[in-house]
Image (cartoon, rainbow, N blue to C red; front, side, top):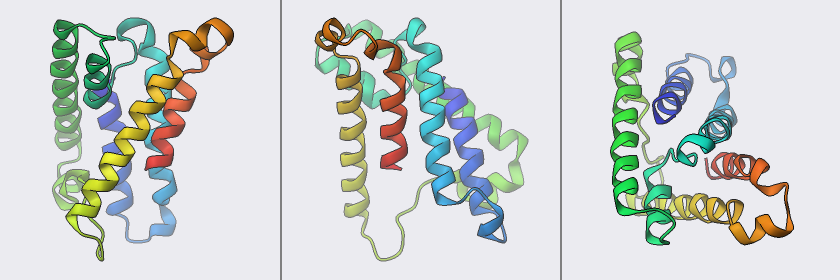
Length: 164
């Protein structure tokens, strides 16, 4: 899932960054939809296999909350990192010119902002994501709202869309 997530989202960001006319691309909001939509689809598809773990921050948060064993958390994080490396590697292999010309789709802090403010935004965005995962997958909520487990990927994907 992390492989597919990185593959699609890096290509989306690079397509936006490399375009001569921003009006001919998906735009900033399209990038956010790409990230949120991929998370929604991938969490939905992998929830029965791995619990929908795609982001190491979420896995680490669930480990700290004792909802995941150390062995499983370490395994998931290693696999997520390998999936991310492979996803970026495949993009670089298929689109080497675009990849090298756009810095591999890496994030940069916009002019007028400091690296500290960028870090702060990442911390807050990660908190929103982890908090949403905890809320959407709360076992106590399942007892009174039977539809929540089925819809859990929706608020998680929407949270990713909003923080982007």
